[in-house]
Amino acid sequence: MALEKTEAIILKSFNWSESSRTVELFSRDFGKIILVDKGGRRFKTKRGRLMPFARLEITFYKSVRTSKGYVSETELVELFAFEKEGTMGRLAYASAACELLHHLLSEEQPQPSLYSFFVSFLKLTETVDKRSLPPVFLAFFMGLLSQLGYHPSLANCVGCGRTAQTCETETGEVLFCPERGGIVCSACQTAGDYYIPFSRESSKRLVALQNASLSEAAGVPIGYGEVTRLLDALTKFANYQTGLVSGLKSLEFLEELRNGNLANGKGNRQQ
Image 1 (cartoon, helix red, strand yellow):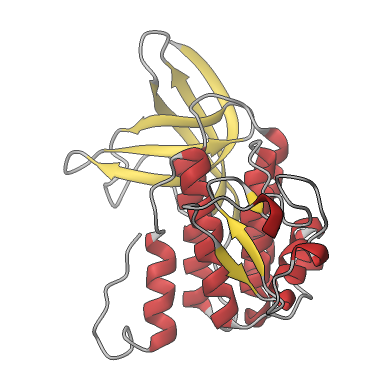
Image 2 (cartoon, helix red, strand yellow):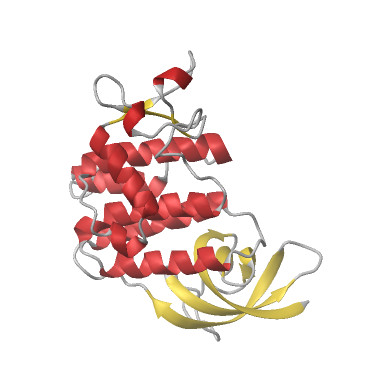
């Protein structure tokens, strides 16, 4: 086995014995990798521990026969503790980003620019005002899709290229078709297609967020109700275009948190 070293962030872990587990990581140099973490579940370990929501320097043995390698050494580079006001919401959005990467990334396909984008998202999730978390996550979601080649057409009709403003219905709405990959004007609509209506304001905000950096997105005002509708539309788009499983558990947790179910003991946290 070849000994390799890279920076990485845990996306998901799977326990398979009392002391060991399998971990899925997004690495800077190798893309998504799956490693066996022998003894990683023990409270005490001779090497550094693999921690969630942290940049880790990983030394691992890479197998030439199987897709899994073995963790050798770990060193903490940076921990995202999410200790500012709104900790649970910060954890939920960070977990949702990990879920998206888990579903959308192929194994061992290096994505260094996307890795840097993910690190920037986690840094902002830790530091921004909690009211800025929703637009930052929306911008991350769309940026992730675009970097992977799935760029929703939000400013122009996917059929004829007309601008969003000229695609508005009589009620001032813009119709978004997840299966066709973007907004559709009345002339290009097809019977039987599924459309999600966006208000004029929602459409403009989505376009602004799609074109904004993550730090710029933090300044875009948006309400939780609108966020829920837009995230549902983007998730349906990702499902149609990539086969992503519908619904993100972390966002379901966030909805329970927002509705007060967790505070009342009605919900359970899901990782």
